[in-house]
Image 1 (cartoon, helix red, strand yellow):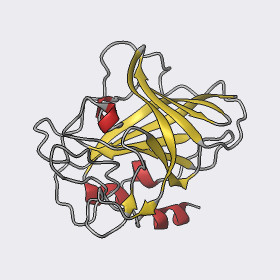
Image 2: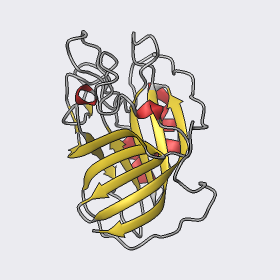
Image 3: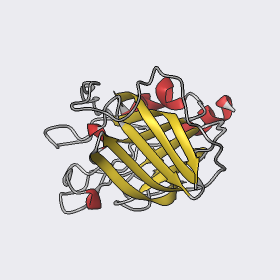
Length: 232
């Protein structure tokens, strides 16, 4: 299964566009062909304020069996502070888009600017799980505080120790963020934190919006480990 997933991941293309300020741009940024944008500095891992998630070193607990169902909602939070709160539009498939990083080459492009999408690799979250769940969404450097124009523009505010909550048609899954990293577009397919197949793991990916907002600077990757699950 690992070899199959890696073979598929190599086909991915960066999907951060760069039209003018009047156009919402920049979805997942998975991963780049022909992009030389440098990665932004990795953020500090320590979140400010308290977190409601147990230490990632603790063994998973409160895992109840949940069947496979499609993603309907994604939330990232730090304690009571909600960072990202968004519905899901279904699947991000490999096809052509004007928002792809490389013109005339297809990429994984979330269908809507204001909704996340599960990439049609890996699998939706289930318990017991066998594969990674991949989530993507648009980041928009022209409107970084407006989720209506880039649902994952705030994803890079997520830090280690924060909480991810995924809701599907079959249940609810709570993850502790165990790793956050910034990866150049052309390194994502060789980054173990992204491509290693792991059950009970979610990987959320979007483009990095640097402080100057002049370009996209690689991929921001958030990795979460399942801590609890409950059926609907």
